[in-house]
Length: 217
Image (tube, rainbow, N blue to C red; front, side, top):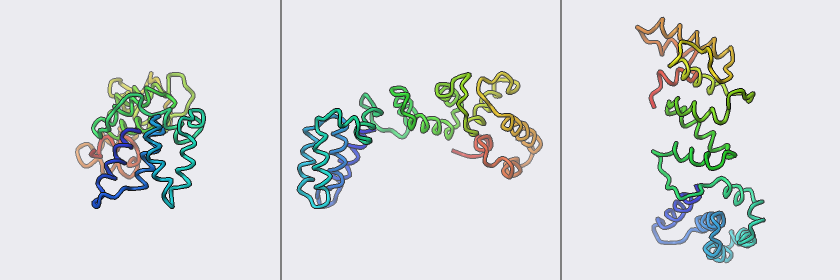
């Protein structure tokens, strides 16, 4: 989210009470403009930083990247971020974070960080339908790639909502997870008339099922 990082750095600097300029913000603005390919703008920040005591060495080194596409591509921050950034303008919105992560991942399926955050977001939001759709792309049917246990717990819960049992589930769910689901369901039914969350927390407080049924977002 390079443009959001750039806007935040600029706004933070403009909010300084005595209208001073921030060398740290200048460095961030130089970085974002290098990543976006705005080399003339980046140079204006770097020239000012080259006159400072603590950022001179960094600024002189950063100037070597201006316009040097091959060198930028090899840089872990400049090249790495350029490859996974948004390809189109998008403003940061906490309410639309799930959609933003989906766009990031859809534009570059090698962006594993976006994928991990996207899956985590849907789990925390208890959006099992979206989670199942996203995880199917990352863990396709027949894949031998192991599913993390919380993923398995979420997927089997999603499946049994529309099916009589876990039979036919297209993901690799371990026998241990299936057995624990049976135990969770049996105990939940047994204490349904009282306080099941209190009884279930001891054995199932660390499961995704407990989170779904008893944790408020």
